[in-house]
Image (cartoon, each protein chain N blue to C red):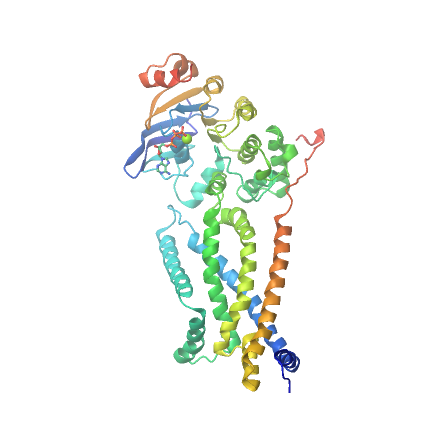
Length: 245
Length: 249
Ligand SMILES: Nc1ncnc2c1ncn2[C@@H]1O[C@H](COP(=O)(O)OP(=O)(O)OP(=O)(O)O)[C@@H](O)[C@H]1O
Ligand SMILES: [Mg+2]
């Protein structure tokens, strides 16, 4: 295999005495779509947040394209501009239109011209089906629409890796389909993605690899077929059985 | 000579009209300048005191930030913890005693009022900053924006908008608070009234006159600010944009 785009080495994260991530080793190859599944509190969000440096790990290393990422603000910001993140709670900028939400990063971080930034924003708003709403502010959009704008915002940076933390968990059931459809299309274009999700059918369908986390460790990983159809660990079987009724 | 209460009021109004107007002018000037400078100080201090020190920043930067924060904290506590009347005395007579500065009363008044407003405003700014959903900060971090960029483009515009009513209230309070500055001989409206009472000893009549002036002024300004706030709240409507198919790429 070629060099991984992202490597996480011996990652430990504690909140006080609570060790949430216990020596995690994890890597992502270019073009992979990885789903992270596991029960609530197992540390999935914390892992994603550590990868994007929203949390400072207690120990361990993040290696991006072969180079360890430092925590100096400049390096950190550059790294984050290459790694997109989509949150469960959208986290759009409330004072900006959908279009501006998408152009601000490309303008002031990627330093593209206004025209270029606008063109990119329109392109990605169109891909997520939100071009019509470019003038609306987040407060004027439904949850599913907000999430699609948030995905467009992340895509505008043309990231090398896109992280999703339960992108559909805060949505009404009828909104979920549209957002999953967008992610499915991205998978087809070869976008490298790590997706934390509770949508098991979706994970099974789009992932090239599935990671099962339990209590701060990666207990089991493999192809969707291996993890979903032939799990080797008791905890995995138990977890999956809850989704099979 | 006037006989009744109302005759006295009319007489004083007429005779001292220019003095009351001059006092009113000074009061407004103090309130406007004090509110503007105070808000600038308040926003600056509030932003700095709320700043999150990046864990990855250099030790020198972290140390410097820490010291600045402590100094600003002391300033805010002192100005919120002492009466403005006392602050006026300390600034006016203190600078004279310590450094021999003979600053004009008006200037001293502006300094005291601005620092006072700044201290209170900085706390409101801090509160407003912490009231913004932290998710938006993470949203900005996730696209690689620096803390400064997030503050400037995302947080502060919202904080400013949320604080506009408060800035209006501060201005209205400032109009009233300027009366305190008569203790350092700033010739504002209350000071003008005090001078008038020195001639005819008609205290009640004189103070009724300036009460009416203060009240009309603050009442009118409050109403105007209310209208302005309504306007600023803006509309919840937006237009859908139908792009022709040709804008594909
Ligand atoms: N900021 C924090 N401070 C303290 N503890 C935290 C913090 N964030 C997470 N934790 C703890 O870390 C553990 C793992 O949380 P995490 O959010 O990573 O779980 P998760 O796998 O994403 O769960 P879910 O599926 O419910 O989202 C939890 O026990 C939680 O209490
Ligand atoms: Mg989570």
